[in-house]
Image 1 (tube, helix red, strand yellow):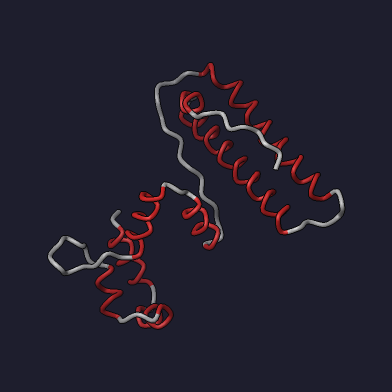
Image 2: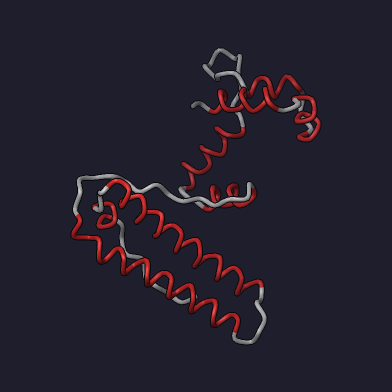
Length: 161
C-alpha cells in the first residue's frame, strides 16, 4: 500500500476537520497528503514518506522504534529468508538463552538496591528490545522452516549494560 492510500483510508475514518485542527494544518493540506505525488503538483510529500526517507537516509531504526513506542507497540525487524539450513538451530537457541540471561543480569543489577534509576530503566529496555528482536527472528525462521537467516546475522556481543 502506498502512503497516500493509507492516509486516504485513515482520513475516511477520522474527522478530517478535527485532524486538521489537532495538527494545525489546513484541510487542503491533509487532502493533498492523501493524493499520489506524481510530479504533476496534485499531491504533496506526506509525513509518512518523509519519515521513510529519513529512515533510509540515516539508516537508524531507532526512529521506527520511537514511533512504535508512541503507538503502544514495538518494532521487530523481519528476518531475511533464504534456503533452509537447520544446522543453525542450536546456536540460534543458545543466542536467545544468552540474550535472556543478559536481560536478567541487567534487571538483577538494577534492582539490587531496591530502586531503578532512569539510566537503569533505559538499559533494561535496551536489553529487552534486543531479546525481542532475536526471538522474533528465531520464531519467524521456525514458522518458515528456514534457519539460514540466523546464520547470516552477525552475532551481537553480549554486553551486560
